[in-house]
Amino acid sequence: MQPLGIYLWFGYELEPKQSLRLIRAAGFDAVMLWWGEYDGAPSPREQVREAHEAGLSVASAHFPDSGCDALWLPGGEGEGFLRRLTCALRECGGCGVDTLVVHLSDGPAPKPFSPEGFDRLRRAADAAREAGVRLALENLRHPHHLAEVLDRFGGTEIGLCYDSGHDFSSPGPLEFPGRFGPRVLTTHLHDNDGRSDQHRLPFDGTGDWRKAIGALYSAGYAGPLCLEVQAGVYEPYLDAEAFLARAYRAASRLRGMLEGGERFPAL
Image (cartoon, rainbow, N blue to C red):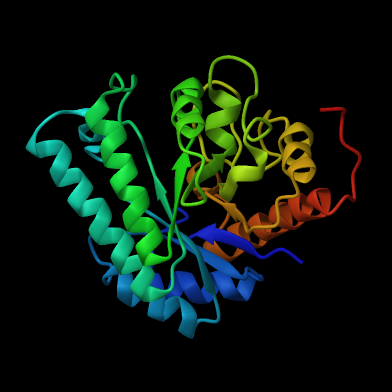
């Protein structure tokens, strides 16, 4: 049975240790972490330890997305981004975190591709291989941008983090994960109204879950099913425990779909 996970910060102002305890109590098996510093939180390494103490595995970590456009820029800024990414890969490998999620762009439009950017991605793939970590590139607002990058890298060190919310709200037809199903390394599952990224619970928006989960099913995806949801509109009437209980029910339904409990449309 596939593990069910959720992002550590799910929208309530709680200490990480308390969040981890509540996540485990709700029934989740795994957690996703932010691999960077933020106010009031211990270091990522310490969060890994605390997750294990709470009885949770770490499904993936998310590399900070701020400044990731520098990947494609010439000069020191781009090399600085690569150094930070390489350091995060080594830290993840040292903590036993095997998947690091990375954005390829930051903002409304991606930077143009550059030879320097592709060279940095090749070096990042080498660092990932040495660390025993996989780079999971996340689909954002411009799916064709990511598709071209994935087409250029066929190794096992670089794959896809399938983000359903970005997929459901991006322009054009649903493309992920059908096209790259066999290369999906992890998931960020959440819903919206098809117009913007809202991080609602699955089945609380207009997302085509039968098609999305059907594509994962057809690809034989066997990794963790992780929610990247935030309390948002739920917070006024659901406390953290009730929100997590509802999140777990939604994740369990997705797992049932993936295990073949519901019929899928032809793909």
